[in-house]
Amino acid sequence: MERVVEPELMDDAVQALAYARADFADPNGAFVDQFLARFGTPPPATILDLGCGPADISARLATALPAAHVDALDGSPAMLDCARDVLAGYPAAAHRVNLVLSMVPVAPGVLPHSQYQAIVSNSLLHHLHVPAVLWRSVAELGAPGTAVLVMDLYRPASKANAAAIVEQYAADEAAVLKEDFYNSLLAAFTPAEVEDQLAAAGLSLKVETISDRHLLVSGRLS
Ligand SMILES: C[S@@+](CC[C@H](N)C(=O)[O-])C[C@H]1O[C@@H](n2cnc3c(N)ncnc32)[C@H](O)[C@@H]1O
View 1 (cartoon, helix red, strand yellow):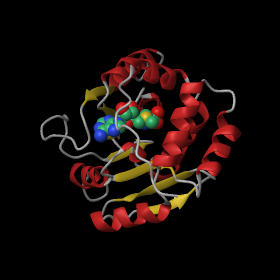
View 2: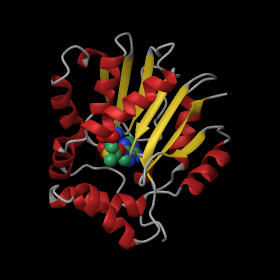
View 3: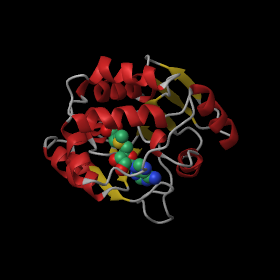
C-alpha cells in the first residue's frame, strides 16, 4: 500500500484535546521502560522530546530520571496547551519539563541546548511530509554517545489491515481518535523505508518491530 500523508501538525483544539485525554498510559509507560532499560545508566541530564504532543512521555521521563531536564518540543499551540494541563499532574517533575513551541526542523537558537544527551520521539515520524528532517535534527542536536529512541507506527500492507488494527485496539475510542489512528497507519513508514531514511542520514541506529503495529529505532550516535 502506498503511503497517504496526513497533516503534520495536530493543531485543531478538539483533535488535540481528544488525543491528550486518550489513555496512552500503557504505551507511554512502555516507551519510558524501553528508554530506561537501554539508556537509563548513566542517566542522561538533558533530554529532547521531538513532537512531544501533550508531553506525557516527557513528564514520565522526568519523573523516572530525577536529575534530568527535558525540552519538550511541538509545533502545535493547541497541543502545548494540553501539555500544560498534563504537566500539572506531575508536580514533582513538571518544573524540569520545558515546553518549546517550534517546528521540526528546529531553527538555530530556539532550544536552550545545542546538543542533548538523549533524544526521544514518539509518533512524530509518520506526521512528517519529509521524514529526513527528523533524522537530520537527531544528527544535529545529538553528539557522539547521545541516546536515541524513536517509536512509531509502521504501515500495514493494506487499508483493510489498517481498519482491522483500528478495530482491534481502538474499538471503544472516540470517532475522532479512531480516524486519527487509521490515518496515522496509512501515513506511517515501513521498517524498510525507515532503514533507508537512516542510511541516507548516515545514522547507524537499529530498527526493530516490537508489535504488530509499532517499530522502534534506537542506539547511540557515533
Ligand atoms: C501523534 S502526536 C504524538 C505526541 C507525543 N509524542 C505522544 O507520544 O503522545 C504527534 C505530534 O507531533 C507534532 N508535529 C507533527 N509534525 C511536527 C513538526 N514538523 N514539528 C513539530 N511538531 C510536529 C503534532 O503537532 C503532534 O503533537
